[in-house]
Length: 113
Image 1 (cartoon, one colour):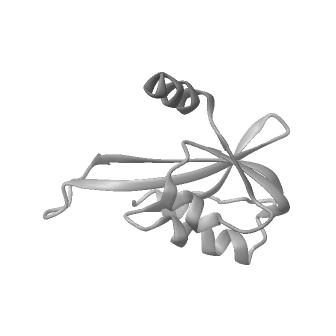
Image 2 (cartoon, one colour):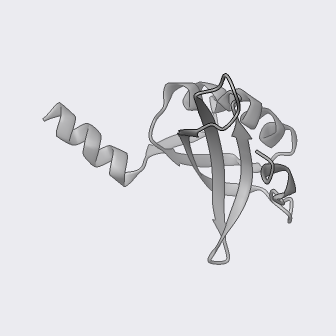
Image 3 (cartoon, helix red, strand yellow):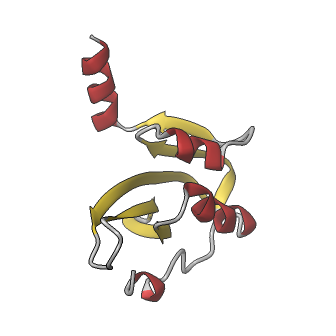
């Protein structure tokens, strides 16, 4: 959480057509908090990764709002993720599409079979 404020997010301020998003939980060192809920979104440009946004212990909507305000995602964008419902709800509009990443795609397929 301390280093999150020092990370430069989308330094070029460009619209990205593809973003990858995921959330995870990590052990917390703060009293009264068992785990931190981390959400992160990155994109790729010129062969390098670019951080589009990161939040700790906030909803996906808190990450989506500044990205929509800054028009970080292009008008027609694809978000590659694990299909988390809260993530889809936060970024849902008519132009954004969602694609399940390969790891979660195989897990879902294995579970259904």
